[in-house]
Length: 338
Image 1: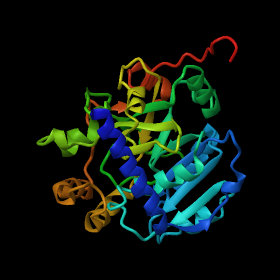
Image 2 (image 1 turned 180 degrees about the horizontal axis):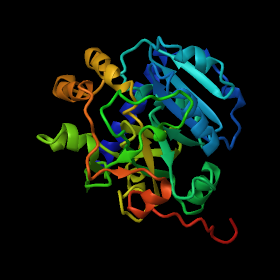
Image 3 (image 1 turned 180 degrees about the vertical axis):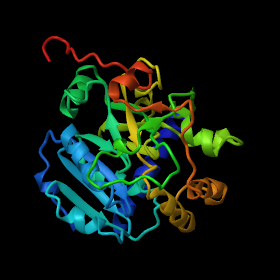
Image 4 (image 1 turned 90 degrees about the horizontal axis):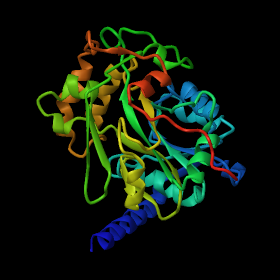
């Protein structure tokens, strides 16, 4: 009975995603350039002109071949910038981000249409994927390794990076590495539990819980994600990239210190612009299922706090995160014959 209910839920998600295609307008469609073995990245965004140069640089260097992006009413030059990128296909919508399951419906439709049998990376513009050996092994190596082991998904911990000193007092130059400004993080504690009926891991903790959710830690941000999946048109994300259907995809990630191959999404939310953006997003009410519950969160960021403490850990790179158990070691040796 449970499997039947999950199958029905997945079909409903796919149906609403299929219907959401009517909300999208093509601004530049270069999908004809997608090769059969291309690695694709899917993103929905709004007013991210500051982040985009490094975001594209990071993922091009990692091995993404084509970006499929949905712009939700940007007015800062984001759409104009993306239209000029030769490896970007861009759609635009004025529809509600929250009503579209925070953009998941739009991206699921694009994945149904263009990602069949491709490895699909679904990330926000403030998320930079890293994994053990990513400086030497691009995504083509990672996906080949996963396929050789019968794995169709790859999980990651979302790790919040922050500066030392009050937010908004730093200076970030677009096109530069944001980890040069956001170079501290909380090494722990993180807690994880497996949830039913989806079987997804639920990870919480870290700096945002420490700074903004001490009284209600159960409401702190979910930090587990499954950003990389070998896509099938019958797949669907359920809650952002925190969980997916079919439920087997969720067991690809078993959390910090787990044995499954995993990475880290470096979360660069706390660039200086976050203070002004928090006030805007609070007024827009497009994030969170119940925006009123999270008004103190937005207010806390708008107050430009100093998130650094004496227990903060300075970010030094992927090897450090592996040593801390925040992402797994990856054995890059392939089975014979692959």
